[in-house]
Length: 363
Image (cartoon, rainbow, N blue to C red; front, side, top):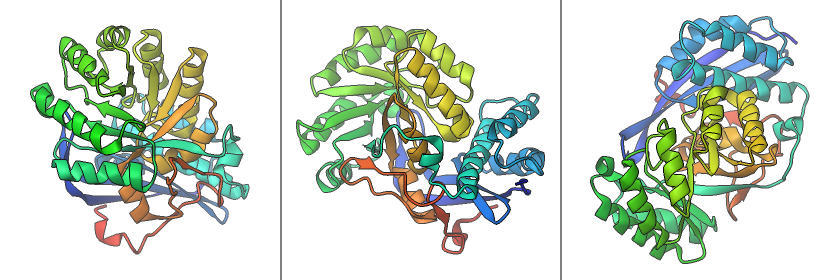
């Protein structure tokens, strides 16, 4: 089966409340969706980021894949990776490759009339998730309602909130929110925090010791993720797991982070790193060094591939992307009980609601 010219669409949806982490604030989320056909089947992939990703997909990548074999995904992925040499891999180009690669895997599974999880091969039927939100802009009552919904409503036994407010200048507020979160979720649920790279090294160590008093076991990006030395220092000092990796746009990025000993659990984002093809490679690299991995954001893009790797810890059930994927697709997964089951339906099991979301289309 030969590939036809992919079709790209871009949508922007306002958030349901103002959102921020330690270093960035936003009030909308943009999703870039690519559909690719071969024969009578259509595969759908997506990524999150600026609308320019859609332009790059249409102008540079879509023409490149036409008439190639729909079954030979590694060959298509390699061709895309070679073609962006002068454009630069990190950022827009990598996100564009990621969306198209996800669509190709969905298409291949549909052509073979298999669930994507079965095509990849599964290590587990059910994939653990953690509730992810708790933005620094949330009022305490909003934070409590969100955490209560996950832990006591949906029985998800692990949750993450954002700290590092105002680029690390509001530590007392950070600790107050952590304490409030622990009170809401109780002593049994796991509590994670994400500083978004807001702290300095010494700040992060001081905060980390205070977090331990509230049973925080996951400290994400305590310093900027490119500060591998700082991450290693903090990892070696604190009892909690130190994690990063969501801004990995290629395999060498993950190799540098792993060999520097910077993290206890490697985060990988298939919508940024180069799709499912590169996700599997990065996960294997982590496994070779005795590390678990956690799938970052875009949970429905990660469900099937997460079931396929032996060293998975969990999926980031990120509020913004869960909300959008529930809105945009039929077939969304149910995390009640703290896990999702991806091996259902054909392909990744999702169908784009084109007409229902037309009002949000911007390109």
